[in-house]
Length: 163
Length: 424
Image (cartoon, rainbow over all chains, first blue to last red; front, side):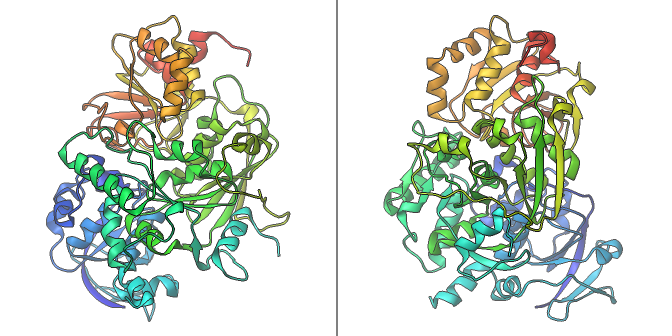
């Protein structure tokens, strides 16, 4: 997967899915409506920064807590294409992959990226550039890359079952 | 080759010759569980994956519990859809009034056995590790895949061995044990790993205590928190288990990421202070903090053990005028048992309200939301900022004795100061 996106930097370790998308809004099913509550408990102003293809650049253990898929669904509906982080919580990580979002581990890039940085990611080459400065990303298992490349688990499953 | 318990369970469900940590395998589900939030998001996705029917209707369990009873029209619509879908698919449904909180219901109803794989659309599916099952939380797209194909992808985890030794002091419960673990390894220290609880003190932990411990494995980032099946498990499952099982253990010499020793003799009563389950402190350090609401309930701490502990503190006493107490038995079965034991009378006489089983205010859904500036003590599992209400509210996580003491004192208080230094 090769991808270009504009960075939005979200600082802080252990940012949980409750602040990313609070519990009272879990009865919403339409991703377009979910967008209106993304980052609600953290900083609603972050929503205004999601313009065009975006890469969220985050610190350690991003997305900890609940399995609510509303978070990456709202992100995807808002133009997020990729997350670059120091580390991710397990269920959030797999939810992103299942929705076709590229998740990249690269603490070195996180250290230099700022909101507005231009990112170019080549997952096949294992490379990430932040405003032209190159970094090596942690290897991504081929199974996960296949899911992301297909556009998510739905498409990967359809491909496999021949539906 | 020596394997961990988690590896053995995955190996028996993955159709591969061997597994090592880091492998990505497709894992067959023995039980797929969904609720009124994760279910509706999964139904259409399952169809988009090309499946109109679930892979096996005997292995799918539906428990609406998050916004039960429906708090508004939108929640009612979700519950209606879940109900209709369960009927159309012919799968098990524990509806309002017949079930309770999903994890409590699945355990009680015998769906969980050692060595099984439980895929749940809820992060606290790790609770089922208490019975030796690889129970793990998944999002709705994963759940859809499980419904359609009966399997999910899984990176084979490492194992962190947690060895429990010694004897617990009075007012030190399962909650305190797991808070001690989170304190040691941190809220992401278990990422990419399962916690496996063992050691000489495990035999003294009943199922309720094990549920309380396994329930918060995800709060350390872990995939699940495993207790190998033993005599305690067998006794609990006798006449209850829906599937045959053989309890396995980790092989001697199996490679572990890490090994923690927890000395229960030295373990004080703990709390997780606002606003992280990792902000663990001895109760003694936070005494006197005013408390506006106490909440006893959730998927693992609305058990009979919790309700009995709470009643022990409340019997013959009153809830402090400053404080509201909400008691949420985790299932209908527990609710009725508490009724027959007279516990509900103790609670209501003391000034508590007793709720129907629901996830309710634990995740800020309904049934006891906090205002800004309010402080709660809860036997729940998460105290993130705004988790139970306004962003300016705060939550201390604690065991049911501590919750009861806070309700009576109107502030964080030592249960021993109310009940006396009990000989356990």
